[in-house]
Amino acid sequence: MNSAKPKPTPPGEVILEVKDLVQIYGKRPVLNGISFQVRKGETFVIMGGSGCGKTTLLRNLIGAQRPTSGSIHLFGEDITKISPQDLDRIRLRFGMNFQFGALFQSMTVGENIALPLQEHSQVDPSLIEMVVKMKLELVGLTGFENFKPTELSGGMRKRVGLARALALDPELVFSDEPTSGLDPVMTAVVDQLTLDSTRKIGVTAVVVSHDMTSCFRIATRLLMLGSGPRQGEVVAEGTPEEMKINPDPFLQQFLRGEADGPIPFRLSQDDYLKHLLGDG
Amino acid sequence: MKKSSFALGRLTDIRYNLPLMEIVEKAEEKVLILIVTGEIDLNQSPTLRAILRDKAKEKTPHLLLDFAQVAYIDSSGLATLIEYYQSARAYSGKFAICSLTSRVRSSFDLMRLSEVFSIFPDQATAQKSLTGGAA
Ligand SMILES: Nc1ncnc2c1ncn2[C@@H]1O[C@H](COP(=O)(O)OP(=O)(O)OP(=O)(O)O)[C@@H](O)[C@H]1O
Ligand SMILES: [Mg+2]
Image: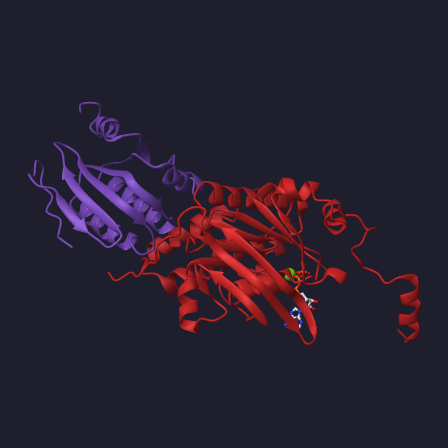
């Protein structure tokens, strides 16, 4: 066997380091100098308003798109600079649970989950079948392997996406809103899965979420991205306890889910009128 | 990798040398013990599978896997154990696993397999149970 498996990162070691990340769409900086670190075994939660750039950030972290500037060290390698081949090698070490599932519609649930194992391992088909069943059981979908994604509800598809992200038992899992659209029980099931795999097995999780209950249940640290006047910047970062007592009005409005506060979602009365009259 | 030539009361242990996993085979009076060291992941589980399939073919009556030195097991490793569990059951062979580290135990728990396998805290307890108390 010539398995060139990289040395596993020791506990507490930084496995993801983002420095001065900038992503400009057109002329608009969606991410404007983001920096943070994630250590092995952590559950790092990224939150922020709709459209603030969370998915954009995740896409950068997995190498699906290149930033305008800045660096992203994943398992010690700057993925903004490496070759596609080297990126493929690093990809085997993490799983990605996409915001909208991104399942192959022509394949069954079971085939979707089996695919990474078929492509990247020598595991026998009969064992792959067993692994698929285990992953489906993990996300509460036992018995659904022969369904097509179109035959499932949104929340079920979401969980298939998670099962597929876990197919290769990655040491790092990125999840884009894993619990949105799930009922409270299924949310708790998915949260418990995150807790067990991070705290007991040492998996690292980077989770985008704006479900506050879920965020504070699973996070070891949280980061809030700004929007409106603070678009592109990190509003706050810290442990759940630190975030709760952080007085930043943006953060507090978000945590409390209040309509009134500095987070703009509407124009002022004056600006609205100008906009309607077409001279704004 | 050496071919297994299991015989009861064999004098020297067989050593399978693999890059990130080592398996030492120890034949006790009634129980064949496989002492596994390393990580049972996607790269290593096919090798463990090959050895376990040999044991199933030989209809090993009492097999014990000692996991004291196993730092990690993934789903493919667990599936490999289930496959052996199934073949052993078919010929009424006895199968146990002992000395799980807490991380490995958590993997069994997470996949809800801790109740499926006979798991023991140490070799002595496992051997006693495998041979029906007459250790
Ligand atoms: N490929 C693209 N080209 C141009 N603009 C884009 C592109 N992708 C996203 N954007 C813009 O970047 C901003 C951030 O989008 P993103 O999808 O990252 O938000 P988000 O925080 O994930 O939102 P949500 O919580 O609704 O999923 C949005 O204003 C969006 O219009
Ligand atoms: Mg998004």
